[in-house]
Length: 122
Image 1 (spheres, one colour):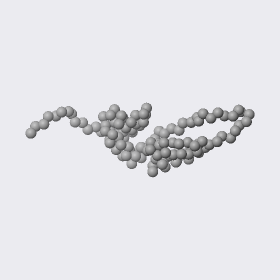
Image 2: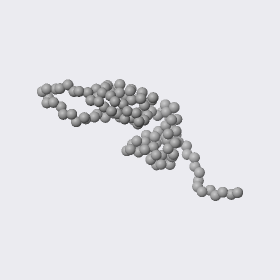
Image 3: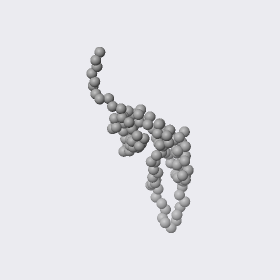
Image 4: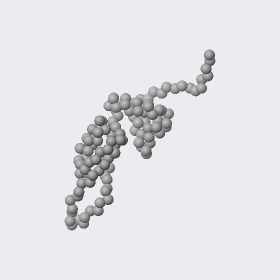
């Protein structure tokens, strides 16, 4: 029995740097894993597998590239001659893994970073 060759089969090899470059595109401009995979002619399972493998090698971290930005809660300050003590505000942060953190706005940035990393790793 003879079969027809419908296309050229190819097996691509990706370096760890190439994999990281592709993984870092997820989330940029709202790009999903599916969209990034399609752009690079990959499957979603390959992207997730790369994440898992690179994480084991210590090359990938879920918080890689995380940036904390200042938040303005729109509170009007008192006139300069009578500074009022600022009240802490409750902040809710939804993480990429679906978990939610609630913390006080006066929380130290370093402590918050450690907390987020611990919750992401759990």
